[in-house]
Length: 433
Image (cartoon, rainbow, N blue to C red):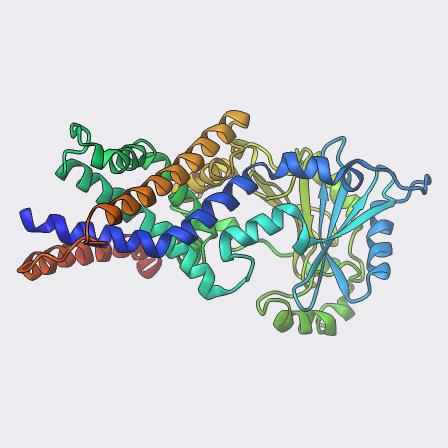
């Protein structure tokens, strides 16, 4: 074991150099995102709470069609019905994937609009996930940085014990000692933050989603994996087998490459006002969102969610539910509630609000803020420790110890074996179910 100390020390040092810049960016952007509801409630007062100059009332359905006429090239993908005093919010998308938000007052009249990309919450989220580049490679690097943070904690703990830093009274190791001790204190919270952030990541996020889609016991129930479809018998016989509108066919390949454009004007489709009425009769309470069907057999999807990323739209994880409504009759076709989720889906339903800092109110935010600040302080102390080392010795980095190859090979083999075991555990359900 004696010769394992130096290689691990070198790996800890070089890993810190490579991930520190991204880790600092992740932490600062995380702090910024932590308080996005409070920030947006103050900087978007007119959008969220303002009234239109037009005082006459119109139906929500008329407002949706008015907005689509006003924003040529965009289509309505979602309508969010928020609780008082928030205005309703319509999400618009175009074929290139651009989005705009339109806000309606209590009379369903236009108040204001926003470019979705430039809202405070979306800017913070984009920086946090891909440094505002929306680039997959950058997203993978950010994900890798988060995962390597776990290694830094584990290796740092080993080095702390190996060097007996806590009991060491040497002034030369003062900064290194505090760097290690802070790392130990925040080790578990940081591990939880990394784990609960993985569902948003590019690589692991897709693996987790795939596993949830193929294994109802772990992820989502059968109704979520195979959602119900609207009954075509509600359509006139002569039009049941008609092709989908051309715009839907274009949308299936043009809008992010994997989804058809939502349809707000299909023949015989019920109004969104009717959907709201049916949803509230079925037990849905504000705030909730309505997603339009993307084709003639699609359904209206109405949901309460705990991790929307939208100011004023989140509910408690226990209150999460998704309802499906036939787009022609308004009949409820199915309901998925929190109790129907599998183990992993339940974990992340709680984990994401915990990560975002709104699971248990202001206390959650304060704890997350403390962990983030402590992490920045630990990084700073590690840097100061290295600077002091360069002043006091000719050796600027941990020196290489000879004859350690057999130990390095042994421990690398153990690491690879552990990683393979973890990957096998994660992918087993999706392969054999």
